[in-house]
Image (cartoon, rainbow, N blue to C red; front, side):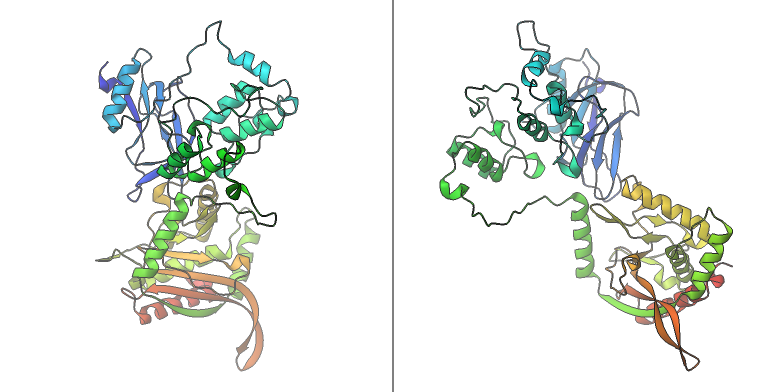
Length: 488
């Protein structure tokens, strides 16, 4: 078998900044026939989930990465080959590709002979008391790891009845096993006479931290019976201690917990949160932030918005749409602020690409309205709704959120009056938008009431001087207070 007839499923590189990705979910299993462009596996990067598709037709012969694991760009995730390719050729390809003999190829389970215990018999034997966990409802929409779904099928468990404790609420292998035991069933391969007997298989291939492996040897725990909750899919010290506690092998002082002790849970930081943390920390450390503040009366803007929305019932222009358009217009009027800075050179732009901070489940993302200065309010509104929806579904393309010349962060909908925002590099500035509220103002020497919104601009003093920031805010105030001037 020629190696060029074996096709790798490799971790792709989506965007210049991507260095690794986390396996989210496989759409295929070993033995499945796939064609070119078929979906193979969802990979979560810093801020989105993308799907790796097949580059060749064939059969999925190996899967080397499980959901929850993080792998570098270029890492081998699986193998596609023809049915007549030998396992020796597959293993040789993997060994030559990654240069790591410790990688275990996840092969299909061998067909059982008539004398062997068939999964169907095991299901009948072990699910006699699981009526409450079995029903005919479709559970294909339930998020579950491939191992958990396969195990649920063996036990006859409907995943609608299983509570997922994995990442993003995904059902894991442990969740299925817990559902079986909670319903009074017995796990496959266990013995009622000795339910606590540890697996006797070789656990040398199990991924574990050095501390966990050493503790397991001391306590006589087989790593095969430990849950896996450590970083990069490894058994950690806590996993070994949990297995030992179930077997009453931990010293009393280690297992005794004060009744009044509060419960806590540690979770690994997500890839998105790591990216947000590192980028914002670098921004605060390297960019000398300074801020200018201005109040804007938006009664005319609100009246104009109402007129537009009343005329066209299908259009729902928001205040934020006006702010995007106004910022884009102001950047064209004050081009010294329409820049990016990489630490060595300043890049100026002829159009204004506006990034808008959108809150999502694991953090925030900044989809971009490109060339917003050339677009009308209705176009900006439709595009912003589409980007926000796909951002919350983790379906943005890298070019739709990477880049941008200027950023807007609006917390006004939460009732926040005023705040400071951190610059999103390589951009040079970010606008923090507060809530519009009625305030007492002085007009022509008399006290009046107006709807006022507070704006705060954070700028990088290395490239933007105070006078430039002040000029930009003055122009922006003019556009927002007289919105008709930016619509011509």
